[in-house]
Image (cartoon, rainbow over all chains, first blue to last red; front, side, top):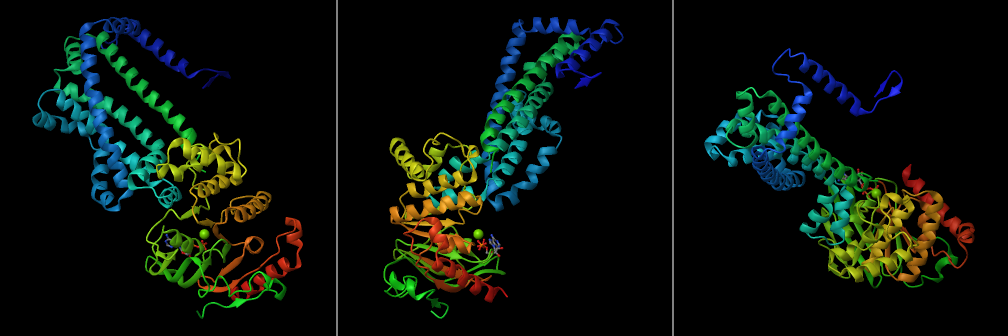
Amino acid sequence: MTLCGVRVPMMASLIVWCILWEIVGRMELIFLVPPFTGVLSAAWELLHNPKYLDATAVTLRSFALGMTLAIAVGVPLGILMGRVRAADRLLGMWVNMFVSAPLSALVPILMILFGMGTATVVVTVFLFSVWIIVLDTRAGVQHVPGSLVEMARSYGASRWQLMTRIVLLAALPEILAGIRLGLIRGVKGVVIGQLLVSIIGYGELFELYSRNFLMEEFWALTILLFLFAMLIAEAVGVLEKKIEYYAGVRQ
Amino acid sequence: MGALHRIDPAPAAATILQRPSALDPSAGDPVVQVRGITKRYGGSVEALKDIDLDIPRGKLTTLLGPSGCGKTTLLKIIAGLLEPSSGEVRVNGREVTGPGPERAFVFQDFALMPWATVLRNAAFGLELRGVPRREREDIGRHYIREVGLAGFEERYPHELSGGMRQRVGLARALAVKAEVLLLDEPFSAVDEQTRRKFQEDLLRLVAQEKKTFLFVTHSIEEAVYLSDGIVMLSRRPGRINRIIEPAIDRSGSPDEIRRDKHYLDTVEEIWHGLRDYVD
Ligand SMILES: Nc1ncnc2c1ncn2[C@@H]1O[C@H](COP(=O)(O)OP(=O)(O)O)[C@@H](O)[C@H]1O
Ligand SMILES: [Mg+2]
């Protein structure tokens, strides 16, 4: 970004928005927007609040469980759809439908099925993230160069060796892209799930803060959550770049 | 065997081949026998029709023909990577039903794993067979040296030129110690200088390794320069047009060979033959 011919780093625009937020907050126009510095100090306090730390632990556990399930199911399913025509025909329609469906609407049904607890949240995370992982894995597998597959076959690779040593690795850049997008959707899923169940983790805190008009804490929690989502997406992004360095140079 | 018309390119060349043509199915000890191979793609495209062919052991045989005539198809059928629509292939008398350890394939587009080093790529055939790491890396190193890539063991394919990548493909094929090497236009993606150097290295390897090489190309010069026997395929559907045994005297330097009258005559002869059925 350049401003008046001077190069301004990307962070600068963020600082501008923070200052704007601070000014609007100071003017006390709407109680919904407390000053940014207030939010920051609330965030600092939150980080030392045992209730927050408990909620974080609960949330992280649901998130990690849901994501593990999504990856464990999504990647094999994507590989299956990428390699087997019949599986693709059978499942393609459903995966494409779910990937863009408003899944929040399903959470109340999930609550009936899985109860008002962690299980529902885990399933919500799973349902939010799994489809994009399936689709990206499938795309990656379909783009594995045919000659690499023939090469492995001609040197006597078993089905399993073909999958683990060629297909999985050749499709890794797309699989990781799918997982990165899945993680971001999973964060959405964990928050929406907890909000709707509303008695666990961050959902409970959000509920508590908004009902009591604790706007500083409310925003602090939101920002911490954003930061978390950005950080893990960034981490996978770094891994992706490293992998692409090898796999992306596909002659 | 009506499809086979063997011509003698020049009487002076007949010295090496006094026994019946090694490419003729009646000759002894062919390593690969192709019988009545026909291949149709999707019911309509007929890529190969009634191919009968014997590949003699320990020689370099070339499949020569215009692009799209089914050379790759035939090579992949022999490799066991494609199923013929009818007919059969036998290697050492056993019918081919799939890939086997006695055959190794060198791919036109190299087919290297971009995430693996030169060494791992070269030893990949052995890795798939469960050869212990130390052993397969020793063998891999040996053949990397053989193809002239010593010092590049830890590099990745994208750090190499096209010619060097194909050398890795060749090292991988040699490392599994197959009897028959199937090479599909290995030099087509390589510049002319590299190509000539590569051809000379290949001739040295053929002499040294005592393996059977079945080599696909659409370059007449390359075929005559390298081959003990040239199988000429006609346009689609590919049929064997004729078989030529150039019997080039390879005792001279590469430049001498390329200026040799017999070499030039053979190239010219094939060229005329091709023109006859292209028109
Ligand atoms: N998978 C395929 N499906 C349909 N047609 C094919 C396929 N592979 C090759 N062909 C056709 O078969 C013919 C022979 O192909 P190929 O063996 O690759 O020829 P060459 O290697 O001599 O150039 C070509 O006309 C090509 O278009
Ligand atoms: Mg070809």
